[in-house]
Structure formats: C-alpha cells, structure tokens
Image 1 (cartoon, rainbow over the protein chains, first blue to last red):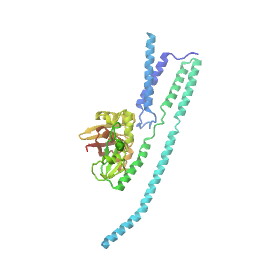
Image 2 (cartoon, each protein chain N blue to C red):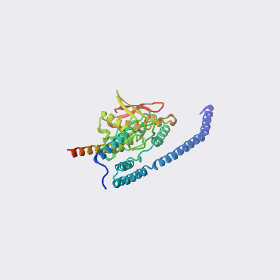
Image 3 (cartoon, rainbow over the protein chains, first blue to last red):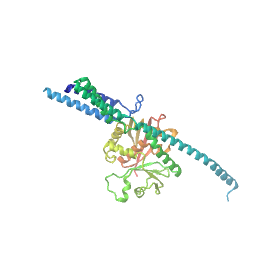
Length: 68
Length: 309
C-alpha cells in the first residue's frame, strides 16, 4: 500500500478546486433570477476557497524548497 | 338646547355607526383568517426548509469519498484517489456551508408586518400625526446614574402634533411608551436589531466612527455581508442624507396592497436601521423627510435630515 498521489497531483487538485470555489462564491447571488434563490452560506464558501488557495501556495512552496 | 334637526342627524349617525360595526367586525375576522392561513403556509414552508437533506448529502458524500480514497490506496490508483478526494471534499463542504441560517426573504417582511400593523393601529387610534424622530442614545461606555440608564437605548419618538420635538430626558430615561411632555409615543425603532447586526459586522460602534467611515461600512455590510439589498448608495445633500436602495429584502412592505402608513413614515427595517446608524454617528436627532419607492418596488429612495435640538 502506498499513496497513489504525488505532491504535484495534490497541488493541481487543490488549485483547480480553489478556482472552482472562488468563482462559485463570486458568481452565486441570492438575486439571480435564472437560478432562483441559493440558500448557501457564501461567506463560508469563500473561506473554504481561500483556505484551499493558501494550501495551494504552501504546496508550491514545498515543491520549490524540494527542488532547491 | 339642541335644535331638532341636529338631533335627527346625530340619531342617523348613531344608526349608521351601529350598522357599520358588524361589517367592520366581519372584515377584521376575514383579515384575521387570512393572516392565520398565511401563517400556516409560512410554517409549512419553514418546515420544508428545515427538512432540506443537505446534512444527509454531506455525510453520504463524505463516507463514499473516504471509502474510495482508502480503496485507491489498496489499488494504487490515481484516478480512484482523485475521485475519493473529490467526494470527501464536497461532502465536507456540504456540511460546512449548509443553509441552516438562511430563510426566504418573504419570511422577513411577513414577520415585520405585524409590528407595522400595530404601529399603524396605535397611531390611528391616538390620532397622532407627528413626524417620527430618531433620538440617538448615549454611548455604551458613557457613565450614567442608574435612573438615567434608559438613555442608552435608541428610540423613535412620534409626537402627537406635526412638529419635530423630543421628550424630556426624564421621560426617556423612564422608558415610557406614552410620553406626556410633549405628547407622543416612544418606542424601539424597527431597525434597532439590524443596526446592532451592522455594528457586529463592522466590528465597530456607530458612535465611534465618522460619517465617511459609516458610508463605506454601511454599503459593504448591507450589500456584501448581509445581502439585504443588491445595491446601496448614500450621499450627503446639503443638510440631508440621500440613500438609494435597490432590491431590498423588505421591498414588499411598501406594496400598496398592504397599506402600511408607518412604513413610509418610520421606514422599513432597513431604512430605519440607516436612520439609527446616522443618529448614532452624528449624535443628532434624525427624521425621515421623504421616501420614494419605484412602482415595481425595486428602488427605494429616502432622504434623512439631522436636526439639532
């Protein structure tokens, strides 16, 4: 048994998820006539996105340190 | 001596009043029934919201994700690992951002409706026609003797006559509802709860910030943080403050069908909260001079005036 994901895999996954969440938290609006009323805590969604963004930066930093 | 003609007239009036009384009672009963039905419908709607299975979805995704992630270790599969990671993450997100705190905006104005109807009834009954005046409270940390502690509460005063007046300090400190000098009523503004929420979001007391700070903070708090409106603009105009609110969650309170007089005079909870914030920041009494609502209720424009007493 070994971890099937490398650091770059995790880094990429975190980056993609962070972007999706950031875009979603910005685009979600309770006033959207097309999608109706979104009953979701936008602030928490944005917080999760920011945490993932920071995690991505950390993985990049770790990889940079690893290369040097 | 009363002339016979006027006696006949008063008798006729009495008869008409007696006849109209059952009609009034009937209409009140109908309104009561309507309100009861509305209340039941809203309760059902709230229950439906509470039953939203967001937690169940969250837990299911979390468990499936965890199992797939563990399986990926056994199978040494990157694809399975990504799927597992994805499911686990979205499950956790569903639990983290679940909509327990959100209610439909229709609930907001429905709950505010009874307060405004009560204010309307009181004003009609007492026949008070004065302009509502927002009286700023003393700052929280200011020292006041025990008998004056009531002055730390924000109040709105409606005088009996059409003048801008405020009650004496003694009467305000007693937290009286019916004020005798000058005659009028004193009550908590409808936006009092909201302005406390604004301060919590701003992480500052309205009495401690300047007007520029208030303009910026109010806009951010109302539009971005609390999402009470899609747009909020505030601009000083000589001695007035002009605010323009677009898509307010309380806009339905202004609808003509509801016939609420107090909404345009005292303001809806949002415009009332702005009046409270202005009174607290300027330290002056604030009155709502004019309110214009667009026919589609999307835009509410209100002008406030500060008065020094």
